[in-house]
Amino acid sequence: MLFLAIWHGLHFGYVIFFFQEFLYGMVMEKGASQNTLLQRVSAMIPKPIVIVFRWCFIKMFMSFTFVSFELYYWDKIMFVYGSVYFVCPLIAAAVIVSNVVFAEKKSSEKQE
Image (cartoon, rainbow, N blue to C red; front, side, top):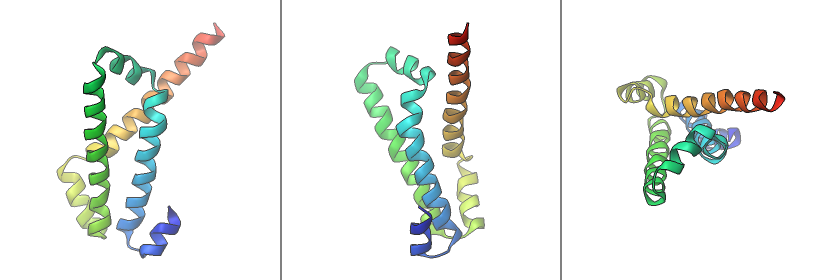
């Protein structure tokens, strides 16, 4: 991803874009499959609703990352991200933190 940011130019927005794309891809690929909390919630909801929710979720995250790709500069990017209260990075952080919390509980339950 760093190579792509350098390839496009050394604007800060490109670095943010490619980092977020990597982070959100990792969260969507590994985070949802390894998160027991998300698995429990999705088991209670009908499958078509889960599929539509995931589609909307992916569209929201990917469009959020393109803001930094288009605006280039830190002050413009932070103005737009702040106007939507940094919702996507906060959701990604919540998924990562819940993976850590629930993974620790699983390993401590196995030891008992």
